[in-house]
Length: 453
Image (cartoon, rainbow, N blue to C red; front, side):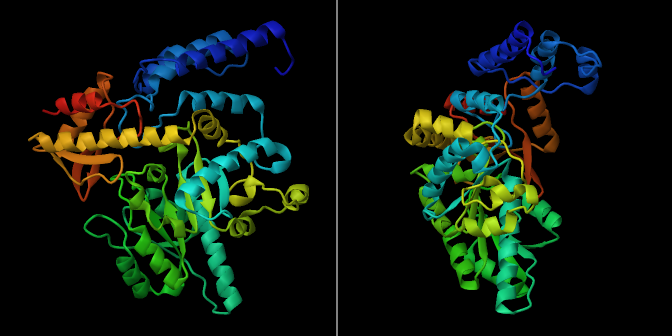
């Protein structure tokens, strides 16, 4: 299997690269859609056998049966959840990352990759206004990023309490119910408790409400506050400035979850919404959401990376050669030891296009979102639930119930026309557009809204 057979290996590699090339250059992109397990069992059969299928048959199965049974998240009318719309350069370079066998966990083994990733992280840090000393690592996704940051927050809080001799062991996190679902999941993993903070009439976490929650439960029991710069359901940006002020007052770690919305830092038209993020102790943004990188990629950045290194560095005799070195080792800054250089596709796309192109692309999606909001307001059968902060717009179809929304979703997907799923808010079924793909046009928006009349 690992011996070199010039003819057979050329065929196998060429088939994979040929498919990748065709997919990367495809225009238009098919939406496709899931199939039942019975269908796939019948169409694909048993794919893992003792003898192997060979590269030709295996690639045929993927290209003609398995791939079409997956939704294309980069389709311009895929507007559900948070889409992934990588640049062709970023997606193509992901092939290079896989082919290069680079271990991205240490400077010793991947200095060039780590250097490049750190430049991409520096660009994001500068957008947030974090100091030159800030730094971090690319991790698989927002859940791992949030968990890694909160582990550091708790470790730091308890170390400081021990040094001060207070005897406190902080175990609480303050967050609103608009925070990402991973916050509750992470708290369960950490055996921590999430204390809910009331939102204001704009659905934001504010300093005033945060202070009430801290005083009610005792500030000394908290080790972190989680604010959000772009909630998944509505795209709400919390009042970061007032939250940061309260965190400084009580000496609490401020973590900002910008997994979806953090990319808006690059857009002048909405940058003011993020005022206060420069005070964050940690911050995440997922480039696979709105910074046009492929899955899976989350940038995790710390104001004081040394605190993360202390909390996360794994100790073992065989690791001494790495952990005792002075170089930047990405695995010291998050959960996990083994890592691929997942930040390289973002770096490559940034290096190719330049940051101005990213600003333009993000602003273009915001323009389409504002158009969508205006169109919803213009149509008498639709009603916006909230004016969008960023590129998510939530609205209702007047007179519809849950079954109507689901039937509409199923029809659009069955026709491979669009993918727009329902959401719920305060017990009501609604629908939403998440517009992060620069290929999504105003014409796409109108075409979809027309189907609801």
